Image (tube, rainbow, N blue to C red; front, top):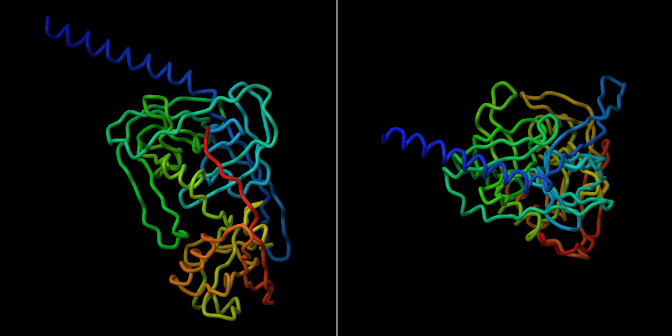
Length: 348
């Protein structure tokens, strides 16, 4: 009799949980979107340059009636064209407002109004999440439409990266499946509130193997809604030693610009990205673009100065001028940009 009672209890509990997740999925699904991106890429071989367009897929979720959508930075950072596809099939263009690759969080905004009302998520306090909490992810794996994966929080991860621009990072580890196209999607708690943004997986086979990470909702709120450090939009590579000598740098080190995101601070400065792709010491490196030598007269020659330069950029206010000294095709140039006024933002 006890065995039967226990079995009935297990069946009943499982059935209730399944019903709860199904209901939560139905309530949250409309706020989750598929994000399609396109970005140009120049490949060079000898004197021949080939322009190709790279297509990308990811997910995101709506956080305001203004059409603001949170997603992962790696999905939209360098995109020139962004299209958002809603669960009802409607497709709306969007643009990047802010993107922080180190924390892998980004905010994009619809550039046209959706024909029907937006469904908005609630952002929860991720500091209250505990290891062992049940969670679920809604995303669009491989762009095949919305799907649900369920798992548990299995850890918390706060990497310390000195060269990251000193942007704080914080991730939740989960066994909920995240595949290509699902990254950028929301990680929900069992109240249907967002506690993270699906970010990356650890795998030896390019597929999900039970370990995925999500940037916490608190970090996303801090960077995208509250603090909002200036978005440089620059992907770069610190060069020193023999490589600096080969490239004829006028100082012992500098920062080789790899990519520049459209509408970012780097783009407004007029920085040119690199396009000749090489492999140096096992690292993939692009050359041929600008080399940053200094920001506001602070030479980018060591870790201390890099931190000082970032602090200057971080504290720039409306009306301040950012100056950059660069090396472009063997010539030293000076660039400048006046910081525009930005709107305060908070999710609905």
